[in-house]
Image (cartoon, rainbow, N blue to C red; front, side):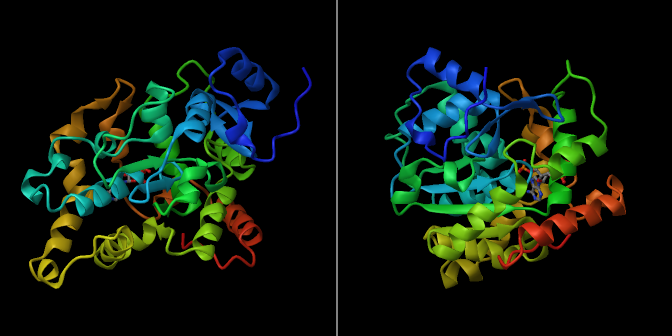
Length: 331
Ligand code: A3P
């Protein structure tokens, strides 16, 4: 069958109620196997995991954002787990004292669900009205793919990204820890790297993902907060303050004096979360090991896996893709 021209992000017009129509659309789109063995489909210029295509369309068609919602957006392996723990703790600091935080007994992904991996994977049009405000959701969707209501309401978007070298290395480990693609031929790291540079990886191209949110942030900084993993590693206190202010829950002077920011940062730190029994042992839906979300939590671990020539290629790509945008990464 001839491949269709990609729709110009008319994604929300796809009818997810007819399984046949949906399968027909899927058949017309370009598909590849990701370097970790998981099937990908190219839609609106983005490479999506085939298993998440239908939930993404369902979310686009049915998700109704509220002004009070907080939407966390990320490429996989960019600090999603950390951001979920921090925003959950900031929003609920008057509900749960730190020593009774649900984070002590639940993985952050159980407390802040993904639209496409959880909510719309389980049901096409779930009732989310009863969730108390502020509702916090997360997604790996590109900015241009977000459900319209997220852009049209006053809900706030917090984006976190990470330098592409560490993001890729982290993803490779995550896939292997969870045994993705166990039936596929193993792919060497340089092949995975090459596909990444071509933009072929889950939720790639990396550049488009990051630039989409960067430009949205420049256009409306009150709507989109743009964070970098490396900045959180460097100075968590100022970043937690910034996140809380952006969320509309700034710390009072009294809270600051009582050390609330340090308590939240400490609870959500890699050392603290990765040592909890729940994160050492459990799993999510029997598929993803909780421990696989906590590996090293360092900046620059890519140097142990990628060559200087690979780093140079990424640097050149960043220079050309981000030229004139004002965006850059410290690797
Ligand atoms: P590494 O594989 O480099 O260690 P995500 O949460 O988006 O899936 O990203 C996972 C990456 O974030 C992993 O990186 C993981 O170790 C790191 N990470 C998870 N929790 C963290 C935390 N509380 N602080 C810092 N890094 C964290």
